[in-house]
Image 1 (cartoon, one colour):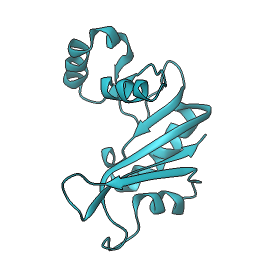
Image 2 (cartoon, rainbow, N blue to C red):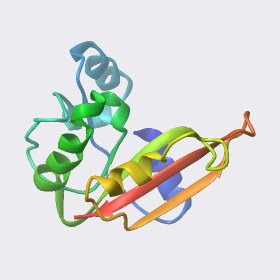
Image 3 (spheres, rainbow, N blue to C red):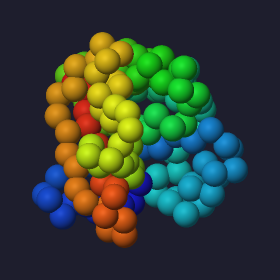
Image 4 (tube, helix red, strand yellow):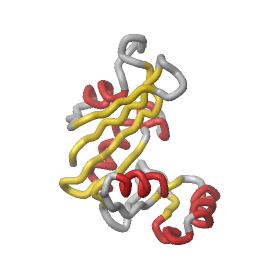
Length: 140
């Protein structure tokens, strides 16, 4: 949470971070590390968690749910968590480059599920030339 706030601040953007984790122990650790945001850190399963409010920007990774449930997570977040006009940001972390990946990228998979990809960014991996960091987003 603090990294996102720092990175945004370096770009002149002010954000108010919130967090959700499934293990209560990790949420408790985050609350103890970040007492200024303790009331913004919740415990729940993202695939059916009903937030106390909707958010303009929601970031997730799809590796958190079984492959067959990934489209359900994307739909739930867009329908129940992202505010109208907001953005769902999906980060795949490290992914093989297009030239060496044997199948579709995560972005291509999500598009094949019927979600319109509004934009994407990628940059080289710092330690492995075969990989790149990728992120894409869907507008709600």
